[in-house]
Amino acid sequence: MNESRERVVVVTGASRGVGKGVAIALGASGATVYVSGRSQEGGKKHPLGGTVQATATAVTEAGGLGIAVTCDHSDDEQVRQLFERVGDEQGRLDILVNNATAVPRELAKPGPFWEKSLDLLRILDVGQRSHYVASYFAAPILVRTGGSLVVFTSSYGGRCYMHGPAYGAGKAGVDKMAMDMAVDFRDHDVAAMSLWLGFVRTERNEPLFQHPDALNGPYGRFLANAESPDLIGRVIEALHRDPKRMERSGHVLIVAELAAEFSVREADGRQPTSNREVLGAPPEPSSVIVR
Image 1 (cartoon, rainbow, N blue to C red):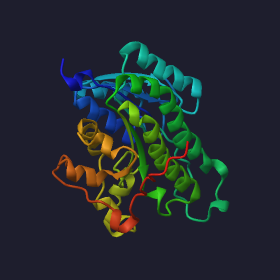
Image 2 (image 1 turned 90 degrees about the vertical axis):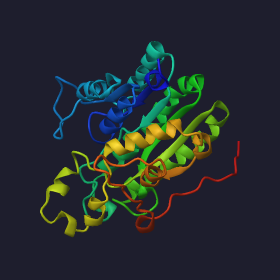
Image 3 (image 1 turned 45 degrees about the vertical axis):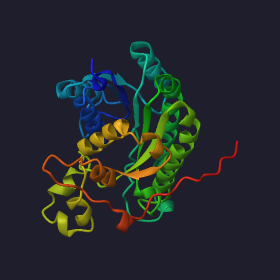
Image 4 (image 1 turned 135 degrees about the horizontal axis):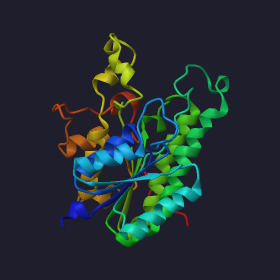
């Protein structure tokens, strides 16, 4: 059995969007991928479609083994059961992709935060907190496996103003979480990194691409430079194989820059470019450790 076939992966929030594309890309490398999320066959349909079962099937069709797990990542007990199952069935965990997040309806609504509802704080519960909880229950398996990787999907909003303070705090918290978890994981050959995604072409964002004047609007430059979920997944796969994996641990990294370094391109051959010059550079971890 080859190394990629032996790899066991958990991708949270994988019913659709970034998580779905990442799961399928990792499945294409031959991995066993546990796909978690709330949307399930027979349940209430999400407006954007997608279920964990459909993603798991796509993972298997791509060449891996997809395993669907219905899990509400706001429920700690369900998350504990997810990783207990992974440990019992596989005995190892090579990659954890913390991607589950809440997308409040008012997220991109213009105006100051006090004119929006407190519903925006859900992104701190399912996003920041749920990433911590998933990592907490996954940690013993990751440590036992060794050579493992924990990835947090984040964005430039952790540094620049983007969608207001709730979103910014959530992403900045995720970035710092990766930095600090890397310290605890260091002696166990487990790497933790936060990845800044560019504008991603997902089901949620697709209407923007279909607008006749899309490229002439305020998001035009980002639409033209969009990343696919598949590219993000292939970058994560390359990070796990990277000999410099532990050197990168604790850092906030930009997907487009990693894609260029690893020679990972879009299916059409396009190479997305970094938004560093426009939106800012990632924070650097401190060398100071207070225990």
